[in-house]
Structure formats: C-alpha cells, structure tokens
Image (tube, rainbow over all chains, first blue to last red; front, side, top):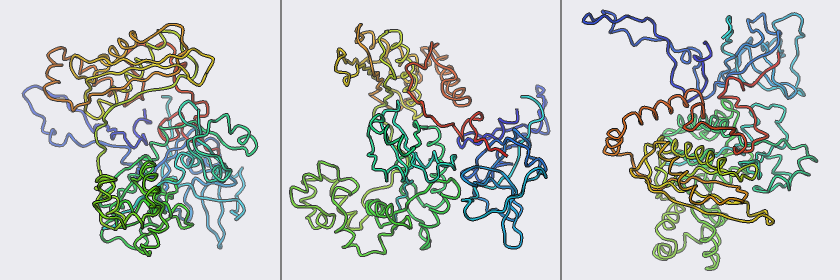
Amino acid sequence: MISTFISPLPDSKPCTVPLFCDLIKAGFPSPADDYSDSSLDFNEYMIKNKSATFVVRVQGDSMIGAGINTGDLLVVDRSIKPANRSIIVAIIEGEFTVKRLIKELGKYYLYPENSDYPVVEIKEEMGFQVWGVVTHAVHRFVKS
Amino acid sequence: MRYALVDCNTFYASCEKVFRPDLRHKPVIVLSNNDGCVVAMSREAKALGIPRGIPLFKVEPLIRKHNIEVFSSNYTLYHDLSKRVMDILRTFAAELEIYSIDEAFLVLKGEDRDDFAEQIRGTVMTWTGIPVSVGIGPTKTLAKAANKIAKDNPQGYYDFSSENSREFLTKLDIGDIWGIGRQYKAFLNRKGIFTALQLTEQSDSWIKKNLTMVGLRTKWELEGRPSIDMEMAPPPKKGILSSKSFSYPVTDFIDLREAAADYGTTASGKLRRQGSVCRYVNISVSTNNFRKTDRQYSNAATIELAVPSSYPPDIICAAQKGLERIYRKGYKYKKITVYLTGIEEEQRGQLDLFLKEDPRKYQVMKSIDKINKKYGRNTLNCMSKRDTSRWQMKREKLSPLYTTNWKDLPLIPL
C-alpha cells in the first residue's frame, strides 16, 4: 500500500522498505549483514520540509498533461518559492485550484495542462494567492 | 539575552481558515467541547462584538444575521498545526518553551538580526498559513507584555528593548502583567498601585511579604532582570483528568459504566505517555444543575489501587467499582469524570511486581498502545463497547481532519 509510505503525519516514524531480505542460516553469518541497515524511506524522498508540507487530493482532468490524474494525491510544499512554470496550488476567487504558473511579458497566467480548459490571466481583483508548490503527484495503479 | 513570546493570532479560527480559502475575510467562531460555548473567534467575529465564552444559543441570531461560520473544536487539526508552528519556531531559537498550544517563549540566538520578528512572522505564515505576533524583551515577562502591544500593532510585532521603558511600564496595567492574577490585581489596586511602573517602585521586601517570591520575580523581570527560567519540558502532571459532559441525559447504569471504561482508558493512556503510574482513581458523576426542574445529585468516590498502576483494566475496574458505590437510580446524569491522583514515576520495582504478578499485562498494554498509535485512537479498546456515539462529545460542526487522515485530505477540483 503506497499510502503508508508517504504519511504526512509529523509524529510518524519513517516507514521503511528493506532493500533486501537475507534468510538467516544458523551458524553461517551473511557477508551482507554489515549493510543490512540500508532502507528506503518515502517520507525522506518526498518531504524536504515537514513543517511546510501538506497532502491534498485532486479531482478533475485539467492537469492530465502534467501527469496529474483525478484521484491523485499531491505533495505540496509551502516553503518553496514558486518560479515560472511551477505547478502550484493557488487560491483564486476564494477557491483552490491546481495549475501551472506562467510568467510572460510581465503578466502571470494559470495554465491548464489540457487544451479543453482556458488559460486564465491573473488579475488583481481575483484575490490570487499561491497556497503552495506541488512537488510530487502520487498515482495508484492498482486497487488497494 | 533577549526573549520573544510568539503567539498565534486567533489560533483555532486561523487553523480552520488554512483549508477554507472561501472564509478568508469571513467571521469564524469555534465552539467548546460539546458545542456549548464560543471559545475562539476570528478577527472578523471579534469585531461583531461576540464575547468569548458566551453560550452558542445566545449568539444564534448573530450567526444567522452575519453568516458566521461555526466550527466544533477540531483538536486533531489544531494539534498538528501547532506542532508545525513550534517546530519552525525552534529553528529560530536557542531555547524554546512551549507555553500553550498557540504560544511559545524563545531565547533568541546571539547573532539575531533586527528583522528577526519579521522573519518569524513571514516564515510561519508562508509555511503553515498561521498568522503570529511577536513580542520581544529582555525578560519573559516583558516579552509577554510586548506581545500584547504587538497584537494591536499593524506590523504584528513589538520590540521592548527599542522603546522607552518608563513609558512602556506606565502604560502597562497591573492586571495585564503575566503572573499577576485577579486577586493580586484587586489587592494592589486597593494599595493604589495600578501600573507596572508603580509596582517596580515598591521595595523588594514589601513585594515579597505581600506577593510572595513569585511576585518579587515578576518585579525583577519588569526591571529587565531575567528571573523566570525557561521550562523546556512540561512537568509531569499532578493529576490526570478525563471528563466529558454527555450530549444527552444518561440514566442507565450500563451506559455510565461504559463511559467510565472509556474515560478510564483515555486517562490511563495519558498516564503511560508520561511514564507514570497512579495510586488513586477518583470517579464522580453529576446531574445537570442548570435544569432546575430535574432532581439533582452528584457524588464522588476514590478507590486506592493495590499497587500503583497505569494498566487500563486496573484503572477501569477501580473506576467502575467506585461508580457502583455512587450510582443512584432515577437521576439524569450529565457528567462523568475520571481523575487519577497519587501520581508517581513508574519505578523499576513496581514494574517487577507487575511482571511477577502477570508479565502478559505489560505486553498487552504495549501492543494496544502501538496499534492505537498506528491506526488511530480507539482502534483497540479495553472493553468491548456498544454504541459509543451517545455519550461522546457533541461535535456537529467538526471540520475534516485535513492533515492527519487519508479520507479527510483537502479535495481540490481541477
């Protein structure tokens, strides 16, 4: 179950996946034993700043071109400064959305990754805010 | 050395707003346990003149009129955001004392620059969405007083050291000083003392005689001499209390018995987390004394344990034994409290005693704690329970557990 590994709970211990399992034979120590504490931690991989990282779920197909599908989880880091072309969680007109931020000729746009949706130019009266920068999308291929 | 007191602005309401951008400039109120009273308000709600602590039903007309958003207390969410804020503050401090869920004292690092307060405010806001105000001063008491000014300051911070201290102390009301309670305030007012400055003008011996050593330390702190230590770890609790009001009147003994088991479990969990055991289990029940038409009854019993323990079945059995003594038929019970006292550090000797008695006890307990930590509170319980919803807290306006539960993650339409 993928979800166990990216738990954003600040209190959670790292969930680890052993790199290998060595069957232990009595009386015959494995030469690999010295290396057996290596393991993979998905928290470490996906979360650089625990205090500023949140997980959200998305619904819709406006970002499929960026590899974000309906039902996916997004890891959002609020401490990262958005750059041109960052995928961001934005607030616009008092609502959340996820789009690519584009700066062009001194103007800012929210850019969907699906040609069925319009590009939105950010105007001051929209109460635009960057909520956080999306660092990862988590997609599940099998039913849990 | 310089101290800072960082305080989250309207913390509970701010937590609710982090995940509700539609509420950004809207009035928000948060209710106490059982949705009884207003315990927290956003700035907009305060501006409507709602007093803290007012019962919910009294503000219903205002809620409708101003379209106020109402929330039950979502402690899981507040705790998660509080921990994030505290972790951020720790990176700014040489020492950190978590004073409450939304307040912390910091000892500033020596090399801190002038824009320290702005940096803290900016970082906490950007990373967590929680606004904070920062008061800075040469002592904890002055930092706390500076924070009060910071709250009303548009910049959100106030640095005592950069100000004229005489003027500051003249403006500081005696009742607003950290550590001066209502009784001392009344006493000092009777003696003609109304400001912090006047307090500092009294002799040490007079203050010690009338306000004890605690008051003298406060005076020294107001003079800029650090006299109150940072408390880095919370002291072990003197007594552990788990009590709830029922959302509807309970009459049945079986229902009360199960509630006693539930709160006994909660209390023993708190006990184990701080590595303590208790000697006495106190249980009390009471009817609703606001319902004048009901017959009133309240009583309490204390049971001494054979051996100090934190083992849930020991606590629960004692609580239920006590309940049998005090339960009277025919009353409508409103509240039940399990209170553990005679708290001591878990001694090696006691553990041994336990192990001799039944080593499996500790194994069971450890496993239960582990499972509940992993899968959430109440996954495993000591007593099989029937329907729990009836005696549990009324929380009709509870927001989702946005940060701690996979099912409750914020959902963003694309």
